[in-house]
Image (tube, rainbow, N blue to C red):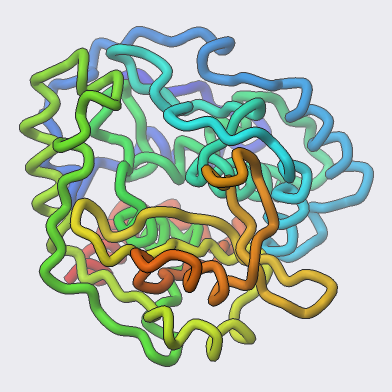
Length: 329
């Protein structure tokens, strides 16, 4: 299989990308799909490099690498404030899947993902960074097992699964179950990708992907997803921290979550939701998290992940598999 190049200054950690095998939900992937991979040009995979470089320059000048991970995530997020909302920016090709970033247009997923990716990348204090450094971080958090070989089914398409996968790999602790009032979502049908396949370039142009996508959805529906109900969220807001990943749980079938953002405590002491908003058409700092939930009757509550320092990253394949089995059982 073909893998992205490993930057010299972090090669020991990034070798994990070529040593981890797909496991758990990833076992459903066709064993030969994507093994003869065509590389997409960087201009397709990375858009808005000037903005990326401005953020990196400011981060180095202000020594963001010395900050705790959550605070660093919010530093990056604030630099993305006001970025236009754009949907389907991950659908960059008709056939070949690849890690990507678009600084000119963000949706809710890519907003939090890029904020986390840059924050992790900056852990190598004093280093110089380029587009591939960020794309490696995005590969590690976006794809099942931290690996992308060009197969669309390797991407984590449902946020609920993202919390389990990234907890197993030590990038973001899934803390929902440790918060007061946590409950389990039961009887949920997961079907968004297969029902709305016409909206996704890869599924539209590759009909053979739809059946295995449905099989993945059936497995994802079995995940023991915990959430904090809307009525309990105001009480736990003092326990949240800057940079926490906030998944918005939905009452509707199709998925576990309908939206995602970051927790940010503003100068007035209010813990707010920062997110790429379809309503406002840009990245905004919104109401309190509990207040945002009450705006829409479809919202059931929140799922919470806490970004971890780079030292917590799991680089041992067997430990990752053990962690994942424990989390999904």
